[in-house]
Image (cartoon, rainbow, N blue to C red; front, side):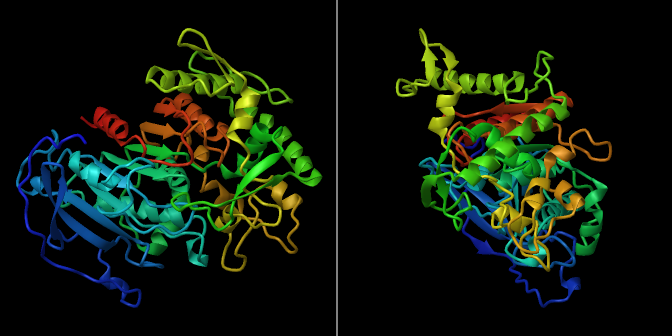
Length: 492
């Protein structure tokens, strides 16, 4: 554990003021002005370091909440900032605002806490939020509605995160931390929302929804985004998945009740039927058309494309990125002898049998992976509304639907859930800095999805730190020291 840069004096936890919220209370009970006197003084102990901090919890961030239990945030501030002291080189005016969401599976997410979920899949004893405080950051963790209620379906989750950003910006003068240095963080669906929040800043698409909630009159663009294994670009994710897994006919499928990445998963195994193989083949043919329409380029200017069979410079670039991941692991001392799909010569990874690697990675989802033909997936649920709990969101899903009376989500709703749709858009303020991670053992979505996001951002002039960490499964916050070093590098 890296020590904090300024030692703190332990203070007894003393409740200064506590406020409770209820959905039955009048909207006037939810002011947009931050109350700096409503907090608990607490301490955080890590080894021989004790950090005092103020906890402002259960703050409703809109005037007209729909689901109050989720439309609230927790704010944690190192106490040093209230006495003019510095912490890890930061002050009350310069400290970055770390903005982690707790969303998984597009389910509702409650605000994170200091003693909450541990960082990543390691043996850490401190939560990501606790470690952020020790690193000198102000932490704002927003809750957000999710797909389990009619009022929580698309675009509710991203609207809530935008409203939370507006609350922070609106109160910048009284809330410690630099509102121009907000860095979002999330994993899985939460990673997708972190990316979407960063891509779509100040877009007028969301304005009617924000106005209805009584969001603060402020900007909602942010400075940077950290996204772990983002489940994004849903309208093209089925085609990307089958481009990658078309030749893999066996599967190890997640139990449909275990879509949240944060819970222990159970699996069902099987083999694709002839109909499923046909669907896979159909979807695979769609992917090159989409990739080629993006007009994306490698760093050396090479156009990244695919031919009708799914081969080309785009696939070659992904292979190179996986090889780079393997080389990084090898350089760090990982025993790579069991990965027989790699060619290693004199401590250098010189090649990869990509088909064998994909077989090792393994298919996890049946085709279509996201827009299920019977509209039974969690993503179908995301795009439901008040009259239909689940709806299709792709043309293929709608045309081939097996659900009687199925409905399809409106195009503008689908657009508002995909970060790719806002990168380079004239009326959106996209974050300048990005960090995107997707493990090489993660088969929740195609490797192509985060790769396309990172490449499109780079092509539009944004600073992107992108990698496929070796053998990481669908998870996040597993490299917190590296994440915080990246934040420090763009904020100091």
